[in-house]
Image (cartoon, rainbow, N blue to C red; front, side, top):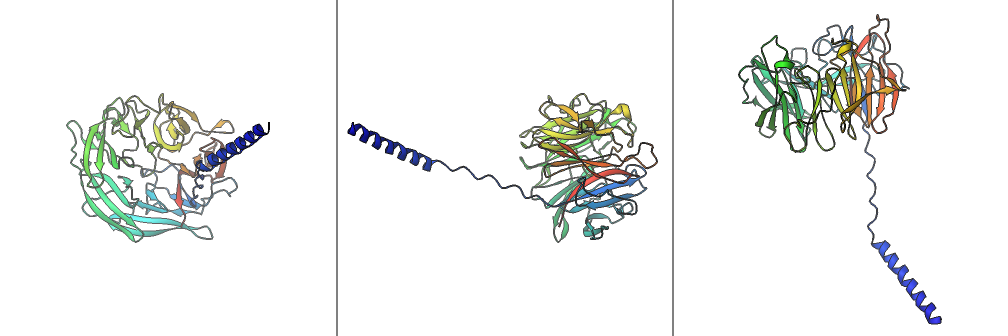
Length: 437
């Protein structure tokens, strides 16, 4: 019996020792990644007087205010007698990065300007111009160009047209803390095909990180007076950004897309291109009936997946798309039955499930967010896991005038909270999230 006890004791010690060794040899649990550093943002809010702006439609006044927060605990954002008027000097349409705006301004400068908006301690906004570069051979008109930042985030490619939109031109710009300079410029060896009259004014340009290529979507347009969406053709030019050589130039089948969204003014106001986590590229466009489509170029491919449409059974045009994460996208579209004018209250927000193509209206307290005027509007911005969505903008004289309001959508949970209100009497057009110093 003693020998048995001795054996069991030795056996137990051995087992405990082996277990201890096993535990000590296990790989330690990895430390969780630190929470991402939340950048500090100001939100620049753009409104227009009398009617909505965009595409030079409003000469009545465009005003900007810069605020630090859009939550409901903030005071109502007033524009009467406040904000900076940019009507004469600058356009609503702009390229943005960090805290800076880049554009060909309304004022006659003969080149590009870089500026930022500052807000004084007393709440007054002003514009500081940081750099200006004159055009060389290639000349771009205000609003009529598209753009993309390359991987280094300091090289800007701008594309537009010349010679009555019969030539596609490009300019590559270096941007730094000390200023801007033109690195190179040229024109693509792409000609207007037989049966067409011109190219789209700007087209849409994007840089895809996974293959380090520029994708340029443009239209060949028929003679003036004919419907673009019925008779235009969409093309994809894949460009090597190192030497700006066109590596492929292919026509998009009409059943996939007849016309891209925003082909006349790039993404200077509205987001029409987005990427998901896998670097699939999504593009908003129109079919032959001028109804919205959302098409996808899968990662690793250079052409659309003709079997996939993320915007089936549309009520009307698809105007903007923004990726929210986890296979969801925010879209701004139009119900044609409620009006097709820029100021028609027929525009609304939905969340698209990209895996199924289904979409649901954005709601607050179980009620759909209201219909909006403003076709050329980008009242939504996605930053730090939140989508800030602006609605409203009726003018003061309308019987149903309400305060324009920003709603805040949590991209993870789908919860919606009410944010800050804006003053009545102005048409609310743009929210931009800009880095603080």
